[in-house]
Image 1 (spheres, helix red, strand yellow):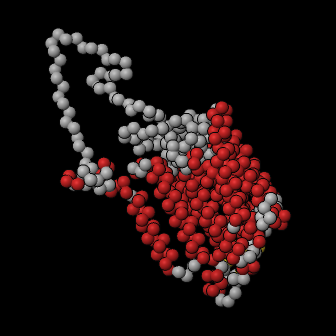
Image 2: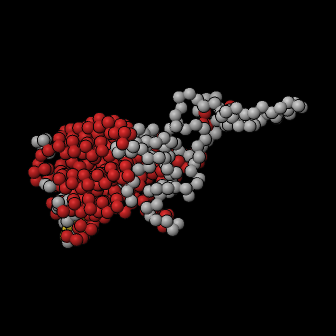
Image 3: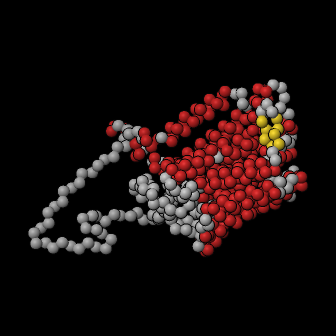
Length: 448
């Protein structure tokens, strides 16, 4: 565990320290696209944060290769090299997209090629565990298609959810933490060395996200861009594929007894397949809803709009930070709830706790719709948001004196209106007054 924590800390430190210089590089190279109709930020912000995250990945793998307890991962398995090859390719395509805005089909092709590169080097799904039956071996084509499909789905799910400051990095960090605990339990609890690469990948992924988050929290100073979102999506999928493709279910010695007993006992084997989908259940749902919504309107599935889940949270009335925290809450609830159920599948307390927390999440989600107002006598002791708004009476306009000429409006003033005072020190990223809730979604442009 100490070696994994050291690898995580080194990855986070390298990513954090490199993000500042990468930001200056992005500004110098002009990787600051203009604000689009679907964006929620108000100032042009540099991209290319994935550059720092990629070098954090390289640093984490390099440190792990020189640690005595983790060196065996590189000696006994080719998976770290396969991951690095696929990550380098998808990262390069992401960097080009952040600078030149590549076509969506080109990025989709690059995602499939990156997954194919990892498959060619042995990072693939070899079998599927079926309760009551045992291990079903997959043919080479079946394993390749399933691996490529899982990689492409995960990458695009993470890419779709990257719409608010700190959202994608935080959600993937939560997912990686849950997966790390699961993979470490398989490796340490069942003494299965084949689970070590997935544990290492999850630890490095946590470090990449933790190192980038301080620069990406609202208001973000830099975005990870497609170079970062596609990169972390690929690593998350590679972790699941690694532990599913290389860990022999028979080594867990759970397929014994009756069919019913084997079905319950096989749950830990199914988690590698289910966990990547549950921990990104929210972005995956966003991906499916976006495809259905755009297809229903006769648009391309890759056309952008403002109907993503995080956009709807802002429309409801949540602030930027609160919307991100709500998405964090649901991601953690699904990920760690699934993890806890895989460990104690017969405990009803886990189900009851998950249901109770889900009710709390629904209350937080709908809170702006039911904002209470304090009575008049209690307004002095409650926060301002719970006080009733006082409407100031509009004074009647005095008639102009006869014969007095109208004075022309000065610069920056309009006739019949008083000049609006702007507070000093306010920049474009600070919200002033009431903000539009994106009622017009038909003007969205570019990608999703």
